[in-house]
Amino acid sequence: MAGVRLDTRIMVQSLVTIADAGGGQSRSWSDFREVWAQVQWDRPGKDAESGKAGYRRTVVVTLRWAPDLPDPMRLIAAQRSLDVIAGTRLLADPDFFQAECEERF
Image (tube, rainbow, N blue to C red; front, side, top):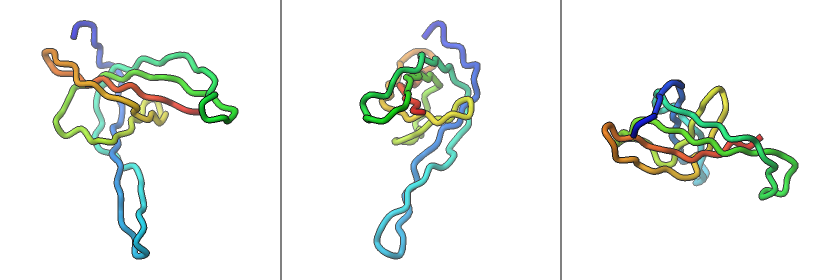
C-alpha cells in the first residue's frame, strides 16, 4: 500500500478475562505490544448516540499485520484510548492492518 508512513508509536492492548471466586469475571486491558503505526485523526463531533453530553471522533490506524494480533483489541495513541470498531487486513507488500477506531471524551 503506497503512502503508508508508520511514524507514530502506539500500544496494542488485549482484553484479559479472569474468573473470580464467586463465579463472576473480571475484565481488564493488558499491554500486548508496542508498534509503529500511521494515525489519522478526524475532527471531534457530538456524541448524540449515547444520549450524553460528550464528544467522539473517528481515528483510522494503520499498522503492520501480524497473525497474533489480539481480538478484541484496544489501541493507545498519544496517551488516548481508542476502541477498535472494525479492522481490515490490507493485502499488500508488506501486509497492513487498518483499524477503524473511536475515541470518546
